[in-house]
Image (cartoon, rainbow, N blue to C red; front, side, top):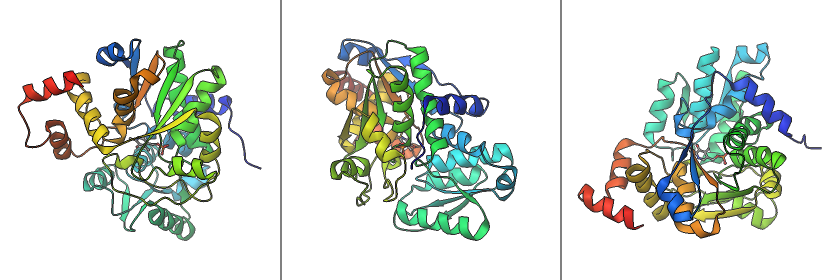
Length: 337
Ligand SMILES: *Cc1c(COP(=O)(O)O)cnc(C)c1O
């Protein structure tokens, strides 16, 4: 039998992670509110110490380890932000952290992990292969494997975002959540629906290899070929032996949609030029959905801006567009979007 998560687990996680993960602001967006005809608020998870929400789940998980497990340390496979979260929390707790990454992960993310004190192991063509190597480290060195998403404590940790949203905005009608492995969506949907089942939870994935969406369509976890995308943090599978997130997303998330790289790029531009925020592709995916499908989203709505770990040169290219047109021209284009 699967252990089922409950609101109490999210509340317990919130108490544990205080002092490591921060309570992030909910910032009203004037431009998106005007477009939607009702309040749109941005949950700014880029203000976490590692620039992404994953520090919540990592803290919730690592703080549950026994003293013996802490002594050996932890290992994980991650497209970057989970690894950063684990590395950050491990350093905070004085533990060893090994992070296994596939060769698809951008070099800025690898360097950032090393700066956080993690031992980085780069290899394998995709996320699933990196995952296998992490398991190997766990077997041979006694390290505890920390799943990026399919773990009850990690899910409860990410769910603390849902608690913060409903406390700050009790009238919230819909929440847009980026989905990769589904730990974030599972936790946030659990917290929101436990308090107010009528809140609409909308999941958004990249149209380049949306593993959760394809698995839901198939009725079971399936392997989906990984593709490079601007929303690289949304890459990777959900695991054929998925224990939690497949059923939680299936049961708790109302709707799953995808966005294209083109739409994600437009959202990154909008974030920078209009909202004054630097976002990575995955971090802008909820905005991409809003910019495209605003009429279908009931306000008040909250868009989760999940991360900002983007290479600055790449970000500048995306924000400037081809050949870096004059700033004024870009502004005009954004204003018309
Ligand atoms: C991990 C991540 C996601 C998706 O979270 P899951 O729990 O894997 O669904 C979204 N955005 C960013 C920036 C992430 O790092």
